[in-house]
Image (cartoon, rainbow, N blue to C red):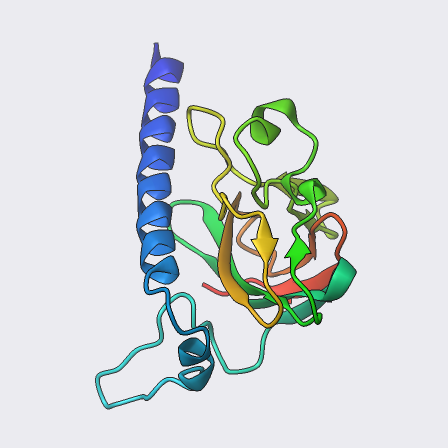
Length: 192
């Protein structure tokens, strides 16, 4: 009986995280017309009361830059641990190539439940080298990965804000390896 309550509470927490992620994704993907505006505002103004948003990360330099195929780059701007036991990795997927690129389906991973929900970053993992454990992207109760999803093509010079949410490694583990199919691996530091 106690196990059922824990599972229901966990599902409710995951559903709340999905709703928050979708709200962030909708806000980050809003706008439309001019692709040059976000590039012009990459250095946020910092007034006395201004705080960085989750997408801005800790500094102007990314935690890691991973190279993929066909000119795709993934800049990881932050990896933040929250009190709920999750780690959210934020970044930007860029097309530095000279032509549009169809994002590889391999980024979604190969799990049937994730693949049937469309393109996503469901194949991403965090590796804890100390604890010798691998952490996979979380899913909601319908099997949808808690990542940016619904993309297929990135035009030349275009950028896409992305996120992935994982279970948090133990509190003493801050250094992990981030892996995403078709991209190089990179060590990143979890904050928070």
